[in-house]
Image (cartoon, rainbow, N blue to C red):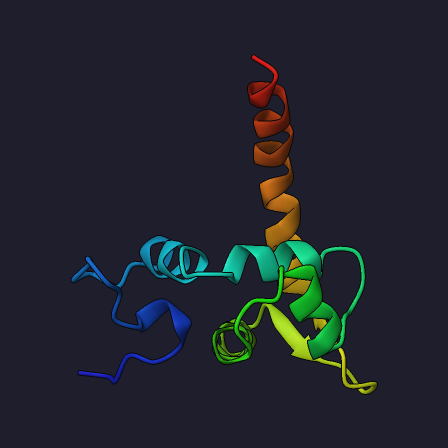
Length: 109
């Protein structure tokens, strides 16, 4: 049997299947992961600027999430030292925009 590798084959909390949607939801459900993606949606940020944008999140947790998001292919470290979204990360953020618009309407109910 071939060895399973890559982000879609990682073990997932609460799932024995490792199905891609479960892996993605597990990653995005980790503390600060969605916030990091959200803050990077418009432009790259340095570690310090990202930490400030994330309400002074713990540097240890922030770096752990950035590492996970980089390994998943959503975030990259730019030449200038700032973190930015990859094309895949941009696509993921665009996928969440309808949910964002829904949440904005919902909060006014």
